[in-house]
Length: 194
Image: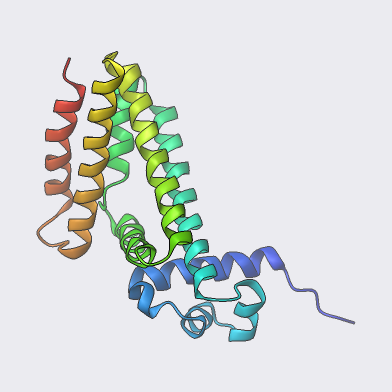
């Protein structure tokens, strides 16, 4: 009797292996062989799902975007008002624990790979702009600030979140969760000011 592979379980295992390999080793360490080793399978099985390194990177970015989007939506849904949601969503994007530090490392690795690849760059731009759009909407709901001011505040807030997160990837000892939160609070207070 032929064996039937569970494609969804196989893809989930490979997805996690791609994401963790990228977070741990960066784009230079993301190879079909490394993903296969982490997933406990052969490179042939990896090639069945991902034809090349670009496909691995694109998939890792999709996994990261889905994780962060789902977290942001849950945090926003649980907040009693837009200002609280803005604080929760931006704080939720920081590298405050091991899981989010791995996500931040994967994000930095993807950004580095995207610098030389227009397809990867387009994916990065789309997802980064979606974050700014979410912040802009929350600022509109929280402050009622005029559009140009609200958009400038959202851009500054997104740049701060991504900058703090990137700094935490490079120096997690200095950029402790407390220091990350304190830096973000300074920017949030300014963004939410009337």
